[in-house]
Image (cartoon, protein in one colour):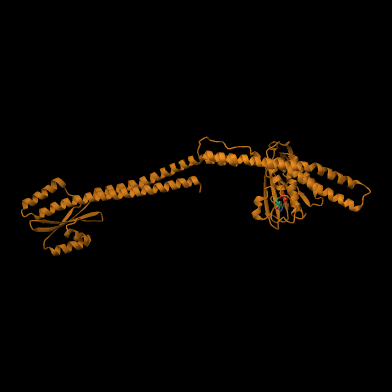
Length: 458
Ligand code: ADP
C-alpha cells in the first residue's frame, strides 16, 4: 500500500475514533437528560395523584385533579396505581403484573428515587405521608416525543458519521497527494537519470524544506557519481586505446612470420598461437573501448539503415575470425515477407560488436556446441534470437549479467572479463532496443534482441 493511502487511512481511522466517541457521548448525555426530564414530569403527576388520593373530602380531591388537568395535562399512556396501608393483596398482584425489580420497591420504602424503564415505558414510584397516612403510588407513561427525539438524534449521528468519514477520507487523500507531489516529481526525475545522462540534475524547488534537502542530497550524490564514472571511463578508454597499437603490431608480426616459407613447424604453431591470442586481446581491447564510449552519451556514431540479415552475416564473419571451428547456424526460415521490416537504423560497427559478443558467449559457454541465430520480425521490431545448449545461467544471477565485470558462479572453467554483455546491453539500449534472456542451468541459454524497425520501412 502506498504511503499516501496509508496516511489517508490513518487520518480517517483516527478521526472516526474521535467522532464515534463524541457521538456516543452526545447520544448518552442526550437520552439521559430526555429520560430524566420525563421521570421528573411523571413524578410531579404521581405526587399530585397521590396527594389527591390522601384527601378526605371529595372537593379537595377534585381540586388536585383540576390543577393536574389544567396545568399539567395527561402524558401518553399515563397510569397510576395507588396502594394504601394494609392493601397487601393489591400490592402483591401489582408486583407480579408490573416489570419493576425488587430494588425499585426498596427505593420506594427508603423514600429514594425509584425509577425504571422497560419496553419504551417509564415507571416511577413514590412513598407519600400526610397527616399520619401513608400511600405508595406507582405511575407509568410512555415518552412518545422523547423516544422520537432520541431516535432522530441516533439517525442524525449515524448519517453525520458516514458523511464526515467520506469527507475526511477524500480530504485526507487530497492532502497526502499534495504532500507527496514533490516526492513523486523527484522519483520521476531520478528514474530518468542513467549512466547515459549522468550530467542531468534534479530541479530544486526552493521551498527550503526537507524536500529541498533531499533534492540537494541527490544532486550531490549525482555529482560524485559523475566524477567517479568519468574517471573510470577515461581510464578504461585510455588503457584499451594504448593496448590496441602494440596488439596490432603483434598480430601483424605473427602474420608476417606465418607467411614465411622456410619456417620450422614448431615456430609456425607458435606464430599461430600468437596470432590467435593477439586477435582475442584485440577483441577485448575493442570491446572495452566501446564499453567506455557507449557508457556515456558521448560522440554519437554515424547511423544508417541496416538490414538485420546482413548484420547477422557480418556477426558470423566476426565470430569465424575468433573461433574458426564454430557451429553457428543462421536460421532464415522466419524472415518476414516484407523485407522492409528487416531494416533498422543504427551503427553497423557497434551492433556487430554487440551481437558478436553474445554469439561468442554462446559458443564459449556451450564448449563450441551448435548455436542457432533466428531472424524474425513482429511487425514493428526486428528480432534476433541466439540459442545455445550450454551451461546456462543460475536463476538468482540472471539479473546481474549486465553489470560490468560480473561473471556467474558456474563459469570458473571459462576465461572472461564480464564486459561483453554490459557492452551489448549498452549498444542495444542506444538503439532503443531490448534484450531478454531465458536460461536454464545445464540446458542452455537464449538471448532475444528486439530492435525497432526504421520508420522509413513502414
Ligand atoms: P564473460 O567475459 O564472462 O563472458 P560477459 O559480460 O560476456 O562476460 O557475460 C557475463 C556473464 O554472463 C558470463 O560470465 C556468464 O556467467 C553469463 N553468460 C553470458 N552468456 C552466457 C551463455 N550463453 N551461457 C551461459 N552463461 C552466459
